Length: 116
Image (tube, rainbow, N blue to C red; front, side, top):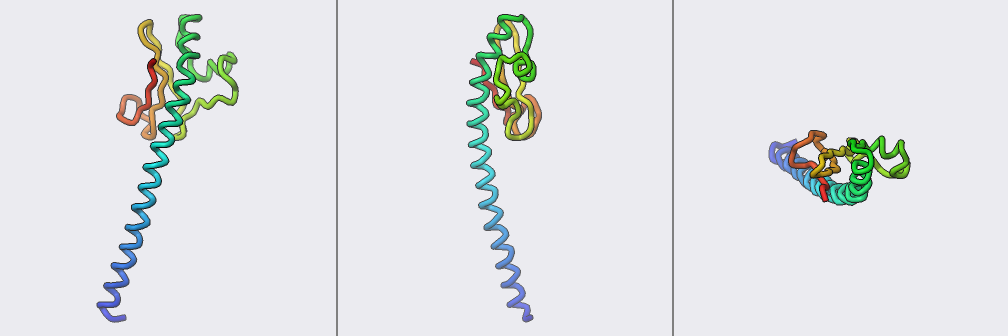
């Protein structure tokens, strides 16, 4: 194969891979945004249940405890789309229900927190 033809073939392959990579990244970004919206809705539904449990029992409920004690349905999702269990933090002043987000680390920018 001549050097020019080889160069053009290489450029075409790299361009195609870049094009496919861009659309894959754009799709993942869009799916992550949709997942975050769905997680926020689920956390909003869990928040009043967690608040009532804390008010009634004076202790922090975990989502597993809420499920075990039939405060939420066994079909209620307690794990986010990234495989992390939802967390509940309670104090007399504030109740937070959260997902640690895709990175799995609490206290980072991708956390999704509901504290109404």
